[in-house]
Length: 242
Image (tube, helix red, strand yellow):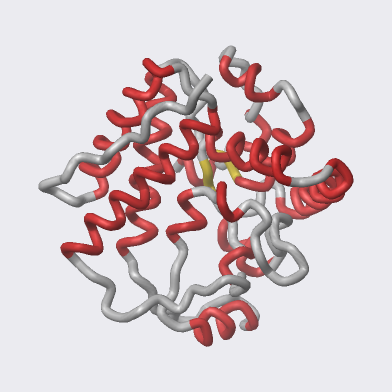
């Protein structure tokens, strides 16, 4: 089956989070007529995030260039909230791109990090400074091409501030960043989750590592998720759900 056609976010007159979330909900919902995979839905959400961010930046540009570069991974020690389709997309990408031995090692690392961080709050994760298991030895994400919108939303104008925040005991360092970027990511995530829930699919927000641990351990998890089974119960991020 060919991939569904690329969804195009309409030009929005209002660029607040509610308008972005609603536009994303409509576009994701429209994909269901094309019988998408979870990977298709996750990819569509990311594509819509990039389109929404481009519209926001055109009207309210960042005050200066962002300092984010490949291998700078201070933000990759924070808690990440994701939709189920994003987790399933990451898992599918890893299965497709990694040799079996590498995938087995990565899966073990995911389980180890999950055991350390399961149930931690955002604040606790800042203090714990546990690296995302998807980082390689050089600080690069092995699933970068399939990364969640929350990861893409993280940004900074000054890498030195990120370093100082990471190295501080409590992370209480003022880090200047383009504040609209994570807000766009949050809105897109909310819109995608709403579209899933409308289809009686689990759209609850998950903690990335916990969700990925479940997804990599069960080769049938996507089929079970489509059937409406609560396969991600153990990974639901109650803090993100509010």
